[in-house]
Structure formats: C-alpha cells, structure tokens
Image (cartoon, rainbow, N blue to C red):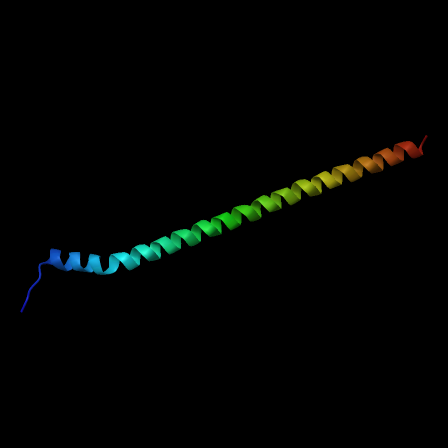
Length: 73
C-alpha cells in the first residue's frame, strides 16, 4: 500500500481543484462587477430624471408666473 503524507495529499487536492475554483471565482467577480455597473447606470439615470423633473417644474412655474404677470398689464 502506498501511503501518502498529509502534505502530498494536500498538494494533490490543491492541484486538482485550484483551476476550477479560480475559474469560478473569476466568473463570480465578473458577474458582481457587471451588476455593480448596471446598478450605477440605473442610479445615474434616476438622478438625471429627478433633475429633469425638477427643471420642468421650475420652468413651468416660471412660465405661469410670467403669464400671470403679463395678464395683469
């Protein structure tokens, strides 16, 4: 019977499983990065919509105020 030392067993297991584990980690990191990019883009779009809506509200209020001021003259 061939008895292996614990160090040999550990080295064999690392050599066997390291490539698949590292590929899995790479895929997970890439997926997380893409998800973060999508979330950042969504947040930026929402902030842009808030600014556009605020600008529209202020502009509409200004136009109404100008119309009311000119109608009194």
